[in-house]
Image 1 (tube, each protein chain N blue to C red):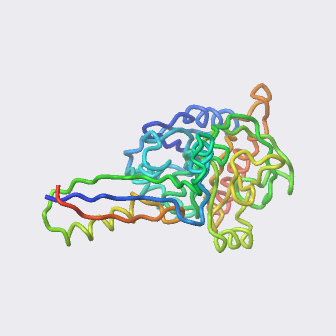
Image 2: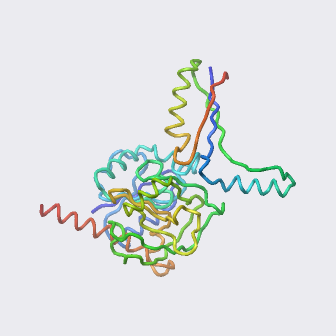
Image 3: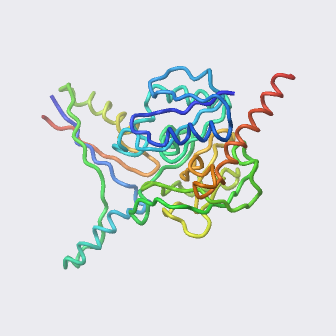
Length: 82
Length: 230
């Protein structure tokens, strides 16, 4: 069986106020080297199949239909054993 | 005329919407559960505010796949009037009935306050009872009302006069071009973050929302008369 590890992130052109707030907090803790923080989502999708190629196509469809909103988000994923 | 208030798991402004229809429009209105698969009995479809499916994943993202949404899309394409308020607006965006998407408020704060709006387009079926450029007061209550779209879409919204309401004075959520409400190209689907159903009596702090409901009624009466005399 395999599972998909999906990352959904805000597109570069979209402002991320949450990320900015976390960046500010890191700065106030003395982590002055922090140049930017972007917050995204991490999803683990367990799949009832061992066929990685088929899983790849299905997960792409899941991302495009539901998991990411293309107006504001990008996605990437990997299929792993598990 | 008959109005439907669509109720999703997590809707919480459905009662307000229902009562506003009863009080202002004085027409039959029914709650319709999200599992309904036939909306043919209704002339106007209202999607109320709330937190459908707990706003999981993205606000409106899960509700958009409720069985009733296929019917809402069908009604919109048939030219029926569809209005989504707050979470209802978010659902219309996720369903692709309106362009763009919602982001977290720029301040990261949930804003629950009276907001001032400018009626940018009073030539829609929802705003005809307002004056052009009139400033009205309608309350907001949201954490994700920061409307976003790309530059091409924004140019198209402006060119087609699809921006119906803009925040006047302070923009409470950081939305692009101060957008508070838009219609689709055909003009029969309205999405807005402020809650007109919570501003229909003076004791509510404002009665400015009344005229949205009256506009809907006037539009329907006109269309209905045209249809029966055709």
